[in-house]
Image (tube, rainbow, N blue to C red; front, side, top):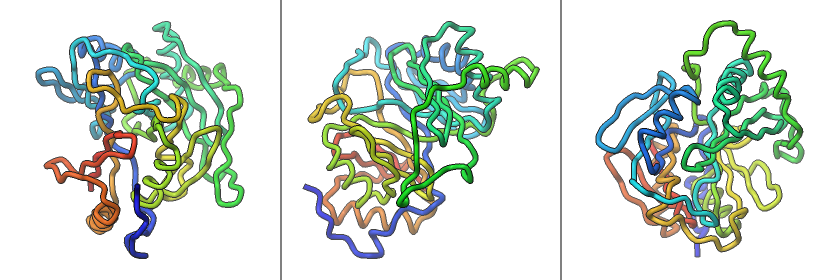
Length: 290
């Protein structure tokens, strides 16, 4: 049971500059995954060592792939629903969509009012969203919560804007980032308590067994759902999928307050060379960095 015995200062919501960082994934065949992420989605390979590789869009690392040969795809467990790649514009999203169509990738899509999103899976069946945000001053809020929807996506309009850029596509725009992470959990109330009261995200919306959280008024940096089943067990160790995702904290003060909240609530964590590592109640890994 997670306690809520935290001080007023320590319970402060996360700084508005909090944002998401690199996602570390287990894949079953690194060469196959690299081909997909580079040639189809337009990532650049930053580094490769034995059984591992990092990719990005010309700036920070966005993906860290770790090969586990013969790792299996397992359904109905906690873990990653999808990670979301945020493109800087509608034309940039259109260029990705054109590549997906050219490579015959099966896709879905939705107009969420605050954003336009394309959905697909990588060769291991790992869920991916590629999206663009509408200008924030066009978003609507009701009772302090952002209004999102699920309207049909204007695929043709997005494609036209991408193709209007005129030049041959050389990959993702350098401004591309990881926009948000969407997780399967087995217990939504436990996830709500953890991510709101301990980590410090604001609850932005709830819908159909899912909760959406953010810092700084964003529509969501994180989402949790029980669509894999209430009580879904943690991801098996030999499965493809999420190893951890990264949250960038604004400064050392934020990190100090987070440490205090984790300790006060009995959450196990580890101070590693690359950041502060913890797990949510569904055992999803989180790396906090400053």
